[in-house]
Length: 195
Image 1: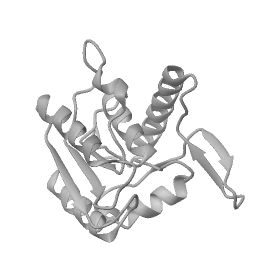
Image 2: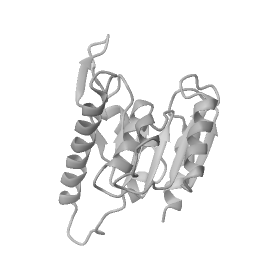
Image 3: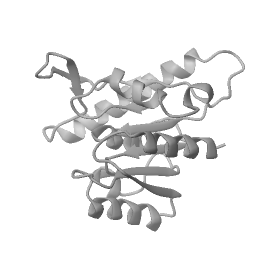
Image 4: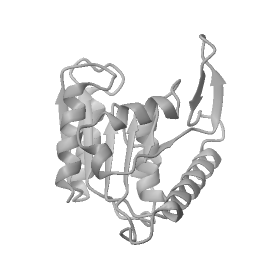
């Protein structure tokens, strides 16, 4: 399940995910379109996962929406498919936060999270009593020229995961706030290692 970034759409995300080496042969790739659509300056339909306004309600709506999409995809699997299926939530930028939310707040257990150029949302770091799902292994991708997901934020996320005993890897690649072939290759190796 792949989540696009701000001012992107599901087509952008699925194209990026399908270009990960080995992913199309081993995984069913589903891209989730954010509910809040708008036109870009070029009149392309793009979307956003949320804004600061009504944040808690929007998070609930988004997680419930993703749960429905996952359930629909599970129901479409052919007979004889593994049950429950292995689900990896992957997101870029703002979509990385949604990948984390889907993995730990959603109803469907995750096998892993791939978060590219985006951080763990603050509400996941302070929820009393834990989360509905355990934290799965996490791959964090960050470019050496990244300006949004700063080294300090990367270190905070890694420290948070380490303190909770969550298996994680931070992969630094030559690039900025973007998908690169170097990161795609690293994500392909990481996915293959999930077994």
